[in-house]
Image (cartoon, rainbow, N blue to C red; front, side):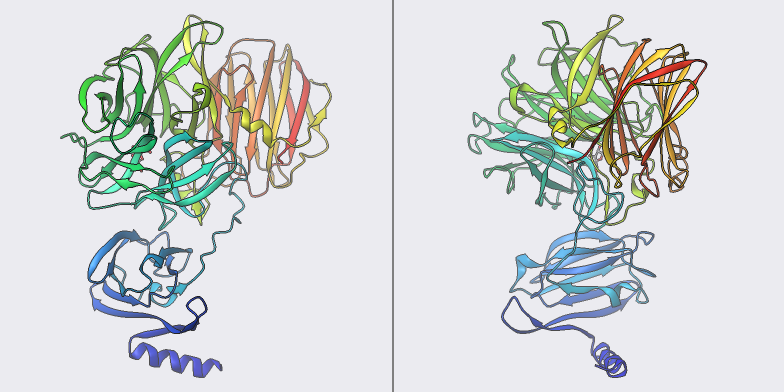
Length: 602
Ligand code: FRU
């Protein structure tokens, strides 16, 4: 069709309020008009009617636009309400609104706030496809990230019948925080994940904030033996606790018809973590309430009794406490077990913004008692490790933790578009004792080893000033693991740099004068999306002659694990080009790299 005729037809259609998008629906097998009929009502109010015979309405998003409120209306009833940053001047990406559940119905949308001049009216379209293929350069290869849209906290992690379920805070309508749903993915090995449809969507009680799942083996709730029962916070003006259950191994959830199950007059009242406490024969719920954790108990998952509160005068308090977990762990090298209360805090982390602190102590089914109230203990010494919780019902009583690899200081602005945020690798937790204190030790879950490709070993070499190792790192995409063994021969500082041809680098160093390990990302690549991103983070280390470090690098993240499990450090990086070279530097003396092993990922 000639451009002119096309334009004429388009303006004709506009005149009668119709945009003709495509004439034939191949799926329906008969000719059907796919139309978007837009009526502007003034002052940012518009009604959009769509032909239901497409799978999706694709909405154009511009991230710097304000959120517009959309009501999806089917047969005169609102079936969904959500906010979208509709494109005004340019389109950053599209988000899909799934229309498929209403194939033979009339669907319309009430839009609030997008001006009549906005670009979105021209750009929105009906389609049977939504392209969510994985192509952004910072999207990790082996860390979980959502197919599209925004993700924050891991939620409701539960193992059942050979499957690890991961739910997560999810916005399917944009890559910034909002419209919280529980997204869902399933894995058989904690590494390869299959995306599932949204598990729990907002309702009249609110959006769906963080929480947990249990397997109700003995049918204490009466939903059925083996039901997966989910607990989450329904968030609107106030926060209340709700539950839903699944009788088909997590494929679908039904909300409990008597929600909410727990309310409070406190404004910050959220993130229920539920577990079975066998000694007291009861379910326990831990809730984050302002700057404390509250414990409740229940025989049946539905009726909850307040037991105690924990927090005053303990640990860090420069922010709100969120996403609790309470687990019992063995102490390495002993027969002892102790309880650990995981407490995410935002802001107030050691390097600003969000972080995970924890308390070690005793729990009797009613009260948690911290054994070292004078100490603040951090689970990870990076800046991008938050909302950490563990899997429920994991095999062999393993306690497997997962963190959201970001920080509320800049999570909404990191330089990705179609999706935002990834999780850490899964980490197995145990306790260890040092100088009379008990600490958490996190190591990559053994499943992570399966990702290692063929090892490339560089022999032992001495570093007395500076030493660049050739050849370059193996994987040009920036996805690899490196294991380095250091032996100090009198150096004050043993450092190494991952770098690229653009002069971008991440420096890591052992400072043997003050016994710290530091990761410095100030020159790591793109850092200007936030004032607080370009920074270095440090962890205390034990004084020793030899150290082993394991680095998991995946395009836009580096996780550094101490070989003895004494510290972990998780930091995001956004290099313009992958770091594909490594060099070593010594100060004040020499050291030896007794082995350097590089594993490309399979
Ligand atoms: C933590 C958090 C939770 C809350 C959720 C909302 O990152 O603030 O406390 O449930 O995110 O998305």
